[in-house]
Image 1 (tube, rainbow, N blue to C red):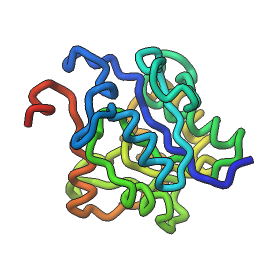
Image 2: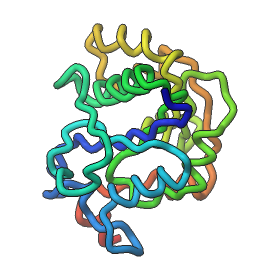
Image 3: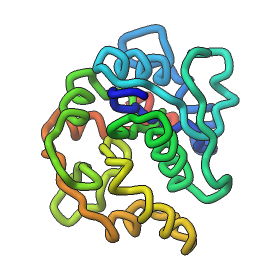
Image 4: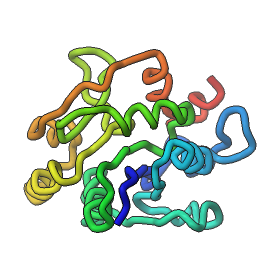
Amino acid sequence: MHTTPLLAIFVGGKSTRMGTPKGLLEAPGGSESIVEALVQKGRDAGLLPVLVGEATPYAGIESDVPRIDDEPPGAGPLAGLNAAVRHAIQHGHPSVVAVACDMPHIEVALLERLASHESEAAVVAPRLREDAPWEPMLARYQPGRLASVLDAEIAKGTRSFQRLFAALQVEVFPLTPEVARALEDWDTPDDVSA
């Protein structure tokens, strides 16, 4: 049993607009990939990293990091969250911090703050504006409060994080300049060059 939070790094996207697996892009200011940087930052923050989704492109790096397949396969991004939540429950992790493999600006201190944010809510997530959608990547999930609702939503065919969040208690994680910067992701080559 673990008492450390899980850092679920979502790697299962197809990267069609980028043309190459986004997590393998070189992280800013270093020679390692974004995924390698996220793994190290997670460890430095006291979290246990796992790769969630189709991780074949990452077979040559971070071989000691567990890989978790989507559950059920083909059910969209909620299947990745479901797999991470089930893994956390099975191994006794108190929470899951979710990030995407194309988020190169996440810092250790931010992961620490998110993991330790005091809340009884099932989800703690930022929004870029009060009326904006929730940001499901860079969010903290409480497995015990989430599992049954997540199962029910997947069974209904829900694939949207926003629909899932509508069925849960969600608390806003304060939007700071550091959070806004961390939410910037690399979807296209133009994002990288910018």
